[in-house]
Image (cartoon, rainbow, N blue to C red):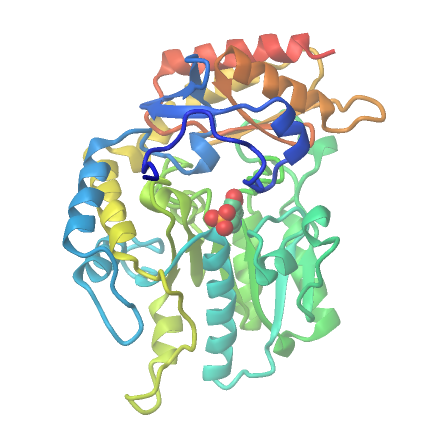
Length: 445
Ligand SMILES: Cc1ncc(COP(=O)(O)O)c(C=O)c1O
Protein backbone atom coordinates (compact mmCIF):
# COMPACT_ATOMS: atom_id res chain seq x y z
CA UNK A 1 0.00 0.00 0.00
CA UNK A 2 1.24 3.49 -0.79
CA UNK A 3 2.02 5.58 2.29
CA UNK A 4 0.27 8.92 2.82
CA UNK A 5 3.18 10.26 4.80
CA UNK A 6 5.85 12.63 3.55
CA UNK A 7 9.17 10.83 3.20
CA UNK A 8 12.05 12.31 5.17
CA UNK A 9 14.56 11.46 2.46
CA UNK A 10 12.84 11.83 -0.90
CA UNK A 11 14.64 11.65 -4.25
CA UNK A 12 15.45 15.09 -5.65
CA UNK A 13 15.10 14.60 -9.40
CA UNK A 14 11.35 14.83 -10.02
CA UNK A 15 10.65 18.21 -8.42
CA UNK A 16 11.46 21.06 -10.85
CA UNK A 17 12.04 23.86 -8.37
CA UNK A 18 10.81 27.43 -8.98
CA UNK A 19 13.20 30.40 -9.19
CA UNK A 20 16.02 28.04 -8.16
CA UNK A 21 19.35 27.00 -9.66
CA UNK A 22 18.10 23.40 -9.68
CA UNK A 23 21.39 21.65 -10.41
CA UNK A 24 23.35 23.71 -7.87
CA UNK A 25 20.67 23.17 -5.20
CA UNK A 26 20.36 19.44 -5.77
CA UNK A 27 24.13 19.02 -5.48
CA UNK A 28 24.02 20.55 -1.99
CA UNK A 29 20.39 20.87 -0.82
CA UNK A 30 19.14 23.11 1.96
CA UNK A 31 16.08 21.42 3.40
CA UNK A 32 13.59 22.74 5.93
CA UNK A 33 11.54 20.10 7.73
CA UNK A 34 9.54 21.96 10.38
CA UNK A 35 8.65 25.42 11.67
CA UNK A 36 7.39 26.99 14.87
CA UNK A 37 7.11 30.64 15.89
CA UNK A 38 10.16 32.53 14.63
CA UNK A 39 12.16 29.42 13.75
CA UNK A 40 12.54 26.81 11.08
CA UNK A 41 14.10 23.43 11.72
CA UNK A 42 16.64 22.35 9.12
CA UNK A 43 17.04 18.72 8.05
CA UNK A 44 20.08 18.32 10.34
CA UNK A 45 17.95 19.43 13.31
CA UNK A 46 19.45 22.94 13.48
CA UNK A 47 17.25 25.93 14.36
CA UNK A 48 17.06 28.64 11.73
CA UNK A 49 15.70 32.09 12.60
CA UNK A 50 13.26 33.14 9.91
CA UNK A 51 14.55 36.52 8.77
CA UNK A 52 12.24 36.65 5.77
CA UNK A 53 8.81 35.48 7.00
CA UNK A 54 9.21 32.63 4.51
CA UNK A 55 8.82 34.60 1.31
CA UNK A 56 7.48 37.81 2.90
CA UNK A 57 4.30 36.01 3.88
CA UNK A 58 4.33 34.40 7.34
CA UNK A 59 3.56 37.65 9.14
CA UNK A 60 2.12 36.02 12.28
CA UNK A 61 4.94 33.49 12.59
CA UNK A 62 4.86 29.74 12.07
CA UNK A 63 2.75 26.92 13.42
CA UNK A 64 -0.25 28.98 14.49
CA UNK A 65 -2.69 26.48 16.00
CA UNK A 66 -5.64 28.76 15.45
CA UNK A 67 -5.12 28.73 11.69
CA UNK A 68 -4.52 24.98 11.62
CA UNK A 69 -7.71 24.36 13.57
CA UNK A 70 -9.75 26.66 11.33
CA UNK A 71 -8.41 24.84 8.28
CA UNK A 72 -9.17 21.43 9.79
CA UNK A 73 -12.72 22.50 10.67
CA UNK A 74 -13.35 23.93 7.22
CA UNK A 75 -11.96 20.82 5.51
CA UNK A 76 -14.30 18.65 7.51
CA UNK A 77 -17.30 20.92 6.80
CA UNK A 78 -16.93 22.08 3.22
CA UNK A 79 -13.72 21.20 1.41
CA UNK A 80 -14.51 22.86 -1.89
CA UNK A 81 -17.38 24.60 -3.59
CA UNK A 82 -17.55 26.13 -7.05
CA UNK A 83 -17.33 29.90 -7.04
CA UNK A 84 -18.93 30.63 -10.43
CA UNK A 85 -22.64 31.38 -10.06
CA UNK A 86 -22.44 29.71 -6.62
CA UNK A 87 -21.49 30.92 -3.16
CA UNK A 88 -20.42 29.60 0.23
CA UNK A 89 -20.32 31.49 3.54
CA UNK A 90 -16.56 31.48 4.15
CA UNK A 91 -15.77 33.63 1.10
CA UNK A 92 -18.46 36.20 1.96
CA UNK A 93 -17.44 36.24 5.61
CA UNK A 94 -13.76 36.73 4.77
CA UNK A 95 -14.54 39.48 2.26
CA UNK A 96 -16.65 41.29 4.83
CA UNK A 97 -13.87 41.12 7.43
CA UNK A 98 -11.33 42.36 4.91
CA UNK A 99 -13.67 45.18 3.94
CA UNK A 100 -13.66 46.29 7.58
CA UNK A 101 -9.88 46.91 7.43
CA UNK A 102 -9.76 47.85 3.75
CA UNK A 103 -7.16 50.37 2.61
CA UNK A 104 -8.37 53.85 1.74
CA UNK A 105 -9.69 55.06 5.07
CA UNK A 106 -13.20 55.18 6.47
CA UNK A 107 -14.58 57.71 3.96
CA UNK A 108 -13.63 55.91 0.78
CA UNK A 109 -12.46 52.41 1.57
CA UNK A 110 -11.39 50.03 -1.16
CA UNK A 111 -13.88 47.54 0.16
CA UNK A 112 -14.98 45.49 -2.83
CA UNK A 113 -12.89 42.34 -2.84
CA UNK A 114 -12.07 39.91 -5.64
CA UNK A 115 -10.34 36.70 -4.56
CA UNK A 116 -7.50 35.05 -6.45
CA UNK A 117 -5.02 32.26 -5.77
CA UNK A 118 -1.72 34.17 -5.57
CA UNK A 119 0.04 37.50 -5.95
CA UNK A 120 0.57 36.98 -9.67
CA UNK A 121 -3.13 36.35 -10.12
CA UNK A 122 -3.99 39.41 -8.03
CA UNK A 123 -1.83 41.57 -10.27
CA UNK A 124 -3.34 40.22 -13.48
CA UNK A 125 -6.79 40.61 -11.96
CA UNK A 126 -6.16 44.24 -10.98
CA UNK A 127 -4.87 45.04 -14.48
CA UNK A 128 -7.92 43.43 -16.07
CA UNK A 129 -10.31 45.22 -13.73
CA UNK A 130 -8.63 48.52 -14.66
CA UNK A 131 -9.11 47.82 -18.37
CA UNK A 132 -12.72 46.74 -17.85
CA UNK A 133 -13.42 49.86 -15.78
CA UNK A 134 -12.07 52.24 -18.40
CA UNK A 135 -14.22 50.58 -21.04
CA UNK A 136 -17.27 50.64 -18.79
CA UNK A 137 -17.00 54.42 -18.32
CA UNK A 138 -16.68 55.02 -22.06
CA UNK A 139 -12.87 55.26 -22.10
CA UNK A 140 -12.29 52.16 -24.21
CA UNK A 141 -9.24 53.69 -25.94
CA UNK A 142 -7.39 53.46 -22.64
CA UNK A 143 -5.68 50.10 -23.01
CA UNK A 144 -2.10 51.03 -22.16
CA UNK A 145 -0.57 49.89 -18.86
CA UNK A 146 2.31 51.64 -17.15
CA UNK A 147 4.69 49.79 -14.84
CA UNK A 148 8.11 50.68 -13.50
CA UNK A 149 11.66 49.52 -13.98
CA UNK A 150 12.76 47.17 -11.18
CA UNK A 151 9.13 46.42 -10.41
CA UNK A 152 8.16 42.83 -9.56
CA UNK A 153 4.55 41.90 -10.11
CA UNK A 154 4.71 38.12 -10.26
CA UNK A 155 5.07 35.87 -13.24
CA UNK A 156 1.82 36.01 -15.22
CA UNK A 157 2.10 37.59 -18.65
CA UNK A 158 0.47 40.76 -17.30
CA UNK A 159 2.81 40.87 -14.33
CA UNK A 160 6.03 40.32 -16.29
CA UNK A 161 4.91 42.93 -18.84
CA UNK A 162 4.41 45.73 -16.32
CA UNK A 163 7.29 44.40 -14.22
CA UNK A 164 10.77 45.66 -14.86
CA UNK A 165 13.11 42.73 -14.36
CA UNK A 166 15.10 41.72 -17.41
CA UNK A 167 15.50 38.04 -16.51
CA UNK A 168 11.74 37.63 -16.07
CA UNK A 169 11.10 39.10 -19.52
CA UNK A 170 14.06 38.00 -21.58
CA UNK A 171 12.72 34.76 -23.03
CA UNK A 172 8.99 35.51 -22.90
CA UNK A 173 6.90 37.76 -25.11
CA UNK A 174 5.20 40.56 -23.18
CA UNK A 175 1.94 42.44 -23.64
CA UNK A 176 1.88 45.18 -26.27
CA UNK A 177 1.09 48.74 -25.20
CA UNK A 178 3.07 48.72 -21.97
CA UNK A 179 5.55 51.36 -20.90
CA UNK A 180 7.61 51.92 -17.76
CA UNK A 181 8.53 54.69 -15.37
CA UNK A 182 12.13 54.87 -14.30
CA UNK A 183 12.88 53.20 -10.97
CA UNK A 184 13.53 55.38 -7.93
CA UNK A 185 16.81 53.86 -6.73
CA UNK A 186 19.43 56.60 -6.48
CA UNK A 187 22.38 55.49 -4.36
CA UNK A 188 24.42 58.56 -5.31
CA UNK A 189 21.99 60.89 -3.57
CA UNK A 190 20.29 58.55 -1.12
CA UNK A 191 22.78 55.92 0.12
CA UNK A 192 22.33 54.94 3.78
CA UNK A 193 19.06 56.89 4.03
CA UNK A 194 17.03 55.99 7.11
CA UNK A 195 13.41 55.44 6.16
CA UNK A 196 12.17 57.30 3.10
CA UNK A 197 14.98 58.91 1.10
CA UNK A 198 14.98 62.69 0.58
CA UNK A 199 15.66 62.76 -3.12
CA UNK A 200 13.65 61.58 -6.10
CA UNK A 201 10.03 62.75 -5.83
CA UNK A 202 10.46 64.30 -9.27
CA UNK A 203 10.89 60.81 -10.78
CA UNK A 204 7.09 60.55 -10.61
CA UNK A 205 7.00 63.13 -13.40
CA UNK A 206 8.04 60.32 -15.72
CA UNK A 207 4.32 59.60 -15.89
CA UNK A 208 3.73 63.08 -17.32
CA UNK A 209 6.38 62.31 -19.91
CA UNK A 210 4.60 59.07 -20.88
CA UNK A 211 1.28 60.93 -21.04
CA UNK A 212 2.88 63.47 -23.38
CA UNK A 213 4.35 60.66 -25.47
CA UNK A 214 1.35 58.32 -25.73
CA UNK A 215 -1.66 60.53 -24.91
CA UNK A 216 -3.62 60.20 -21.68
CA UNK A 217 -6.53 58.77 -23.63
CA UNK A 218 -4.50 55.61 -24.29
CA UNK A 219 -3.48 54.93 -20.68
CA UNK A 220 -5.68 52.80 -18.41
CA UNK A 221 -3.59 52.36 -15.29
CA UNK A 222 -0.24 52.74 -13.61
CA UNK A 223 0.94 49.99 -11.26
CA UNK A 224 3.72 50.26 -8.69
CA UNK A 225 4.83 48.52 -5.53
CA UNK A 226 4.72 51.20 -2.81
CA UNK A 227 8.01 49.68 -1.61
CA UNK A 228 9.67 47.49 -4.22
CA UNK A 229 10.63 44.30 -2.40
CA UNK A 230 11.89 41.60 -4.69
CA UNK A 231 14.28 43.82 -6.63
CA UNK A 232 16.15 44.77 -3.53
CA UNK A 233 14.03 46.89 -1.17
CA UNK A 234 13.61 50.23 -2.93
CA UNK A 235 11.93 52.71 -0.60
CA UNK A 236 9.88 55.46 -2.28
CA UNK A 237 11.42 58.93 -1.98
CA UNK A 238 9.47 61.41 0.13
CA UNK A 239 6.61 62.87 -1.89
CA UNK A 240 6.98 60.43 -4.80
CA UNK A 241 3.79 58.42 -4.35
CA UNK A 242 1.78 61.56 -3.60
CA UNK A 243 3.02 63.08 -6.85
CA UNK A 244 2.19 59.94 -8.81
CA UNK A 245 -1.35 60.02 -7.42
CA UNK A 246 -1.74 63.65 -8.47
CA UNK A 247 -0.64 62.93 -12.04
CA UNK A 248 -2.98 59.92 -12.28
CA UNK A 249 -5.85 62.10 -11.07
CA UNK A 250 -5.12 64.83 -13.59
CA UNK A 251 -5.20 62.37 -16.48
CA UNK A 252 -7.90 59.87 -15.56
CA UNK A 253 -5.36 57.08 -15.00
CA UNK A 254 -6.12 54.46 -12.34
CA UNK A 255 -3.40 53.95 -9.73
CA UNK A 256 -2.80 50.36 -8.67
CA UNK A 257 -0.69 49.55 -5.63
CA UNK A 258 0.85 46.10 -5.61
CA UNK A 259 0.79 45.46 -1.87
CA UNK A 260 1.56 41.74 -2.09
CA UNK A 261 4.53 42.41 0.23
CA UNK A 262 3.54 45.63 1.99
CA UNK A 263 -0.01 44.53 2.85
CA UNK A 264 -0.94 43.18 6.29
CA UNK A 265 1.31 45.10 8.60
CA UNK A 266 4.74 44.95 7.00
CA UNK A 267 5.21 48.74 7.20
CA UNK A 268 3.62 49.26 10.63
CA UNK A 269 0.20 50.06 9.20
CA UNK A 270 -2.31 47.55 7.83
CA UNK A 271 -1.45 48.65 4.27
CA UNK A 272 1.14 50.93 2.67
CA UNK A 273 -1.82 53.03 1.63
CA UNK A 274 -2.13 54.29 5.24
CA UNK A 275 1.59 54.56 5.82
CA UNK A 276 2.02 56.95 2.88
CA UNK A 277 -1.40 58.57 3.03
CA UNK A 278 -1.92 57.90 -0.66
CA UNK A 279 -5.10 56.22 -1.80
CA UNK A 280 -4.89 54.06 -4.92
CA UNK A 281 -7.90 52.80 -6.88
CA UNK A 282 -6.98 49.12 -6.71
CA UNK A 283 -4.76 47.17 -4.32
CA UNK A 284 -3.32 43.74 -5.15
CA UNK A 285 -2.57 41.52 -2.14
CA UNK A 286 -1.67 37.90 -1.30
CA UNK A 287 1.00 36.40 1.01
CA UNK A 288 0.14 37.77 4.49
CA UNK A 289 -3.55 37.49 3.60
CA UNK A 290 -3.50 33.91 4.90
CA UNK A 291 -0.15 34.06 6.74
CA UNK A 292 1.19 32.12 3.75
CA UNK A 293 -0.45 28.97 5.08
CA UNK A 294 -2.83 28.35 2.18
CA UNK A 295 -2.31 30.06 -1.20
CA UNK A 296 -4.68 32.97 -1.73
CA UNK A 297 -4.74 36.51 -3.07
CA UNK A 298 -7.24 39.35 -3.00
CA UNK A 299 -7.75 42.53 -4.99
CA UNK A 300 -9.31 45.46 -3.13
CA UNK A 301 -11.24 47.77 -5.45
CA UNK A 302 -12.69 51.18 -4.72
CA UNK A 303 -16.44 51.42 -4.86
CA UNK A 304 -16.15 53.78 -7.83
CA UNK A 305 -14.29 51.11 -9.82
CA UNK A 306 -16.55 48.29 -8.68
CA UNK A 307 -19.82 50.16 -9.13
CA UNK A 308 -18.91 51.29 -12.66
CA UNK A 309 -18.97 47.64 -13.66
CA UNK A 310 -22.29 46.83 -11.99
CA UNK A 311 -24.37 47.95 -14.96
CA UNK A 312 -26.24 46.32 -17.81
CA UNK A 313 -28.83 43.56 -17.64
CA UNK A 314 -28.82 41.78 -14.28
CA UNK A 315 -28.42 38.27 -15.74
CA UNK A 316 -25.19 39.38 -17.44
CA UNK A 317 -21.85 38.50 -15.84
CA UNK A 318 -20.25 41.89 -15.16
CA UNK A 319 -16.58 40.82 -15.23
CA UNK A 320 -15.49 37.88 -17.33
CA UNK A 321 -12.79 36.80 -14.97
CA UNK A 322 -12.29 34.36 -12.09
CA UNK A 323 -10.42 31.28 -10.93
CA UNK A 324 -11.41 27.77 -9.88
CA UNK A 325 -9.91 28.63 -6.51
CA UNK A 326 -11.31 32.18 -6.13
CA UNK A 327 -12.58 32.40 -2.55
CA UNK A 328 -11.59 28.78 -1.81
CA UNK A 329 -13.35 27.83 1.43
CA UNK A 330 -10.25 26.41 3.12
CA UNK A 331 -8.12 29.40 2.16
CA UNK A 332 -10.88 31.75 3.32
CA UNK A 333 -11.04 29.93 6.67
CA UNK A 334 -7.26 30.26 7.01
CA UNK A 335 -7.58 33.96 6.16
CA UNK A 336 -10.31 34.60 8.72
CA UNK A 337 -8.22 32.95 11.44
CA UNK A 338 -5.17 34.93 10.30
CA UNK A 339 -7.05 38.22 10.55
CA UNK A 340 -8.22 37.28 14.06
CA UNK A 341 -4.61 36.70 15.12
CA UNK A 342 -3.49 39.97 13.54
CA UNK A 343 -6.24 41.77 15.39
CA UNK A 344 -5.86 40.09 18.80
CA UNK A 345 -2.06 40.50 18.82
CA UNK A 346 -1.99 43.96 17.25
CA UNK A 347 0.26 42.68 14.48
CA UNK A 348 -0.96 45.03 11.77
CA UNK A 349 0.68 47.91 13.63
CA UNK A 350 3.37 46.12 15.67
CA UNK A 351 6.10 46.89 13.14
CA UNK A 352 5.67 50.58 13.99
CA UNK A 353 6.75 49.98 17.58
CA UNK A 354 9.80 47.98 16.45
CA UNK A 355 10.80 50.23 13.57
CA UNK A 356 13.19 52.47 15.46
CA UNK A 357 15.15 49.58 16.99
CA UNK A 358 15.04 47.69 13.71
CA UNK A 359 16.44 50.69 11.83
CA UNK A 360 19.17 51.20 14.43
CA UNK A 361 20.25 47.54 14.19
CA UNK A 362 20.28 47.64 10.40
CA UNK A 363 22.27 50.87 10.27
CA UNK A 364 24.78 49.39 12.75
CA UNK A 365 25.94 47.39 9.73
CA UNK A 366 27.38 50.58 8.28
CA UNK A 367 31.13 50.11 8.15
CA UNK A 368 30.86 46.33 7.82
CA UNK A 369 33.12 45.12 5.04
CA UNK A 370 31.49 45.15 1.55
CA UNK A 371 28.34 47.03 2.66
CA UNK A 372 27.66 49.89 0.22
CA UNK A 373 24.07 50.81 1.14
CA UNK A 374 21.45 50.17 3.84
CA UNK A 375 17.73 50.81 3.44
CA UNK A 376 14.83 50.30 5.84
CA UNK A 377 11.14 50.94 6.35
CA UNK A 378 8.66 49.23 8.67
CA UNK A 379 10.05 45.73 9.24
CA UNK A 380 11.88 45.59 5.92
CA UNK A 381 15.56 46.12 5.24
CA UNK A 382 17.82 46.04 2.22
CA UNK A 383 21.56 45.54 2.67
CA UNK A 384 23.50 46.10 -0.50
CA UNK A 385 26.96 44.57 -0.91
CA UNK A 386 29.71 45.53 -3.28
CA UNK A 387 29.66 42.88 -6.04
CA UNK A 388 32.77 40.77 -6.57
CA UNK A 389 34.48 41.85 -9.77
CA UNK A 390 33.22 39.67 -12.62
CA UNK A 391 30.93 37.61 -10.36
CA UNK A 392 27.85 39.68 -9.52
CA UNK A 393 25.54 38.04 -7.00
CA UNK A 394 28.10 35.51 -5.79
CA UNK A 395 29.05 37.40 -2.62
CA UNK A 396 25.46 37.74 -1.39
CA UNK A 397 24.75 34.12 -2.33
CA UNK A 398 27.69 32.98 -0.19
CA UNK A 399 26.37 35.07 2.70
CA UNK A 400 22.94 33.47 2.23
CA UNK A 401 24.34 29.91 2.38
CA UNK A 402 26.62 30.76 5.31
CA UNK A 403 23.73 32.33 7.26
CA UNK A 404 21.47 29.34 6.66
CA UNK A 405 24.12 26.88 7.86
CA UNK A 406 24.60 28.98 11.01
CA UNK A 407 20.91 29.50 11.77
CA UNK A 408 19.47 32.50 9.91
CA UNK A 409 17.30 32.60 6.81
CA UNK A 410 17.83 35.68 4.64
CA UNK A 411 16.87 36.40 1.05
CA UNK A 412 19.15 37.68 -1.67
CA UNK A 413 18.59 39.35 -5.03
CA UNK A 414 21.80 39.95 -6.89
CA UNK A 415 24.09 41.41 -4.24
CA UNK A 416 21.26 42.80 -2.14
CA UNK A 417 20.17 41.05 1.05
CA UNK A 418 16.51 41.53 1.96
CA UNK A 419 15.18 41.05 5.48
CA UNK A 420 11.47 40.93 6.40
CA UNK A 421 10.96 38.84 9.54
CA UNK A 422 7.60 37.74 10.91
CA UNK A 423 5.92 40.63 12.72
CA UNK A 424 6.11 38.70 16.02
CA UNK A 425 9.90 39.07 16.17
CA UNK A 426 11.34 40.12 19.54
CA UNK A 427 14.08 42.73 19.97
CA UNK A 428 16.63 40.13 21.12
CA UNK A 429 16.01 38.12 17.97
CA UNK A 430 16.64 41.21 15.86
CA UNK A 431 19.99 41.69 17.60
CA UNK A 432 20.90 38.00 17.17
CA UNK A 433 19.98 38.05 13.49
CA UNK A 434 21.96 41.18 12.69
CA UNK A 435 25.11 40.08 14.52
CA UNK A 436 25.02 36.67 12.81
CA UNK A 437 24.54 38.45 9.48
CA UNK A 438 27.37 40.91 10.14
CA UNK A 439 29.77 38.04 10.80
CA UNK A 440 28.70 36.25 7.63
CA UNK A 441 29.17 39.40 5.55
CA UNK A 442 32.63 39.94 7.06
CA UNK A 443 33.53 36.34 6.22
CA UNK A 444 32.51 36.65 2.55
CA UNK A 445 35.74 37.47 0.77
C1 LIG B 1 5.08 42.83 -5.15
C2 LIG B 1 4.78 41.43 -5.60
N1 LIG B 1 3.80 41.21 -6.47
C3 LIG B 1 3.47 39.99 -6.90
C4 LIG B 1 4.14 38.89 -6.44
C5 LIG B 1 3.78 37.53 -6.94
O1 LIG B 1 3.17 36.78 -5.96
P1 LIG B 1 3.04 35.18 -6.15
O2 LIG B 1 4.43 34.64 -6.09
O3 LIG B 1 2.16 34.78 -4.99
O4 LIG B 1 2.40 34.94 -7.47
C6 LIG B 1 5.17 39.04 -5.51
C7 LIG B 1 5.92 37.89 -4.99
O5 LIG B 1 6.94 38.02 -4.34
C8 LIG B 1 5.51 40.35 -5.09
O6 LIG B 1 6.51 40.57 -4.23
